[in-house]
Amino acid sequence: MKIFQKIFGKKKNTVENKNTSVEALKLVKVANTLAVSFYMPLVNEYPKLTLINDSGLLEEFDTLVTIASIGFVMTQIGYSYNIKETQEYISSINKEAISWNSESSKLIIEFGRYINDLTSKNKIKDLDELSEAIGAWVFIDLYSKNPHNIEIKEFANSRHLFFVLGTMITKSLSNYWIK
Image (tube, rainbow, N blue to C red; front, side, top):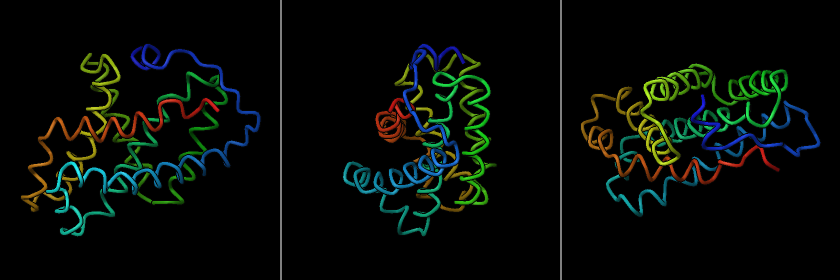
């Protein structure tokens, strides 16, 4: 995970209240709120994205963006906390995410594997590439779970769209643990 240290550096967290369950609940709520708020700006730039709503996939899209946001923030924990605190946060985040959506733990693992695989293959070298990978995960996963939806296939190949969505996530959450 050297790429994340390179991107984010070692940061000292100044959060005084280390109640991990409260912080985990806040993360899930923030990530979901951001996910819901990202859709309309994306539609403004990519009008064809109305197909997500028209196809009844808006909730699934919001879920995937929420998970990508949570997963992205989780990649930063180890650079702000020691190993024990990191494990406590990961456990608390997982519990809160499952309370929010029973499939979230599985999705967080899928997201983590995807990002780790790309990182280990040296395909993510900077924040722009990480942003694109995050956006790609959302649209590729949305399509893979809905392969019958031909319209969604077009979005699963749009690198610029991946970058825009991923950048929305990374810009919003890059300093999440720095309070």
